[in-house]
Image 1 (cartoon, rainbow, N blue to C red):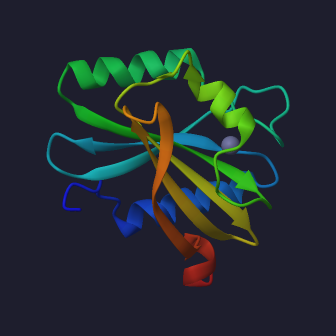
Image 2 (image 1 turned 45 degrees about the horizontal axis):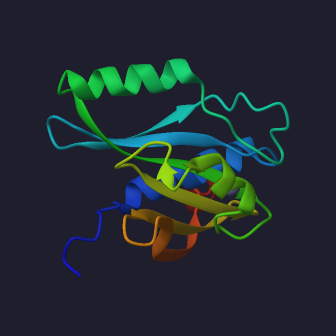
Length: 153
Ligand SMILES: [Zn+2]
């Protein structure tokens, strides 16, 4: 399939770093492509009460992201979060969180999950399927090492 979403490796390393830094809590954030073509991830606050087992985005962050997109400053591609010491697969809790009445909470955004152990991540990328009314895993990326470990600092 030629229309699989792009996911630059530097982006994955940044997200792996975030997952490692916030371990054993779940981290969350987004990734964007800017008007000049540059990709970046943005770390967001996890405002969940039980950060070791859940994540919740701050609604103010979401407003800011949508506003920037409206103004043409970036295209907001997706949301990521980590699963400390667990595989990167959508949990029942994730499904309950993201899908209401067979509709995704943030239509058009990808979902990326990072299963993180010892600074190493396995990623699973999910896309919404209109026919299945479900998120489907479209890519698996294994053994991405976070930045600080790969450069030895
Ligand atoms: Zn999850």
